[in-house]
Amino acid sequence: MIKFFRKIRSKLLSEGKTGTYFKYALGEIILVVIGILIALQINNWNEKRKTNTILENYYHQIITDLAKDYNSMHYVLINLESNYLATYNEFIEKLPTQNSPEEIILSSEILEYTTTAYTNFNTNTVETLQATGDIKLIPTAIRNKLIELKNDQDRAYKASYDNYDNFLKEISRATALGYNPNIIPLTGTSKVPKQLYEDLKIEDNYSEIALIIVSSYFAKNLGELDTFRNLKSLQEDANSLFLLINKELGNPYKDIETVTGDYKTLDKLVNTGKTVDEIIAVIKEQDSENPDYNISESYLNSLGYYYLNTLKQPKDALKIFELNIELYPKSWNTYDSYGECLVRMGDIENGIKNYKKSLELNPENQNALKVLQELIEDKQ
Image (tube, rainbow, N blue to C red; front, side, top):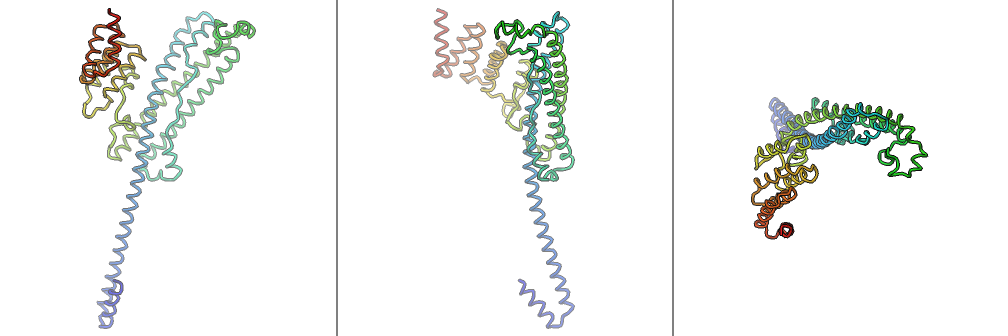
């Protein structure tokens, strides 16, 4: 091609067409420049495509980290509210009624001297972004929120860790005086030799132990209240950041709770204090083809057993098992579980009916065969 153009230029010069030659040469230069510009543009497109691919991968990693932290914080908040903060409030409410240091110490047995208040956040992605300089790839608004969230997470973790560390140092003063709810009960002798208990003269330290308990748990509770507020705020910030990034990706995720799984879990509703009737209402509102919550037969069955065995709420368990039959009437296992719940509640007659229904649907159900035989023998 180059030889072809060279021949044309030579021909023009040999024919004395200087003006045409210069016009042709200028045209060649313009074509070369256009070619260079096109090549640069293609290169820029390729680089931008590579950058967008890298950015998209980072976005998905960040969203996964945010979702893990969001769900983890949910359970920490539940634990704080229902165990640590609740038991402390119970302790404080009863404190004015205690008539001696010994009673104060005995009442402290309900307190949680461990903690789940601090948690490691998933910050590997943002730390990689900062270390590699790729943080500059992220739009300014999202980048600032991401860095701010990490800084807040670091501060929350340190504050919570320091609070518990200070508590341990303070409560160790009481343990040095003989206070240890796991080893030495105040009645004195069931877990240690009586003579040792007397030799240690732990009773002489009751007043000081009681004061240390009250002051150390007071400080611990203040720290845990602060942690509770911090985690609530961090949850909101994580969700806010998720919404921004999800929008950048074209909203591939329904919400932050379902990023790491296909569905939300109903146990979160249980843990936040929803009644079984409220939970059943949520289940019935779900689109069976595209539900937000896991309403599979196996999951609802396990939820029923959670009410039955863990929460010791058989009436609520029965409602869940009934609903499972309503949703999955052709499943033998739903009738088996419903029958078991009825029997455990003392309704033997209806329990037998449901075990028999389970057998109709699955004649190989060995559990139903065994239970029915036992129940019928007991009736005779």
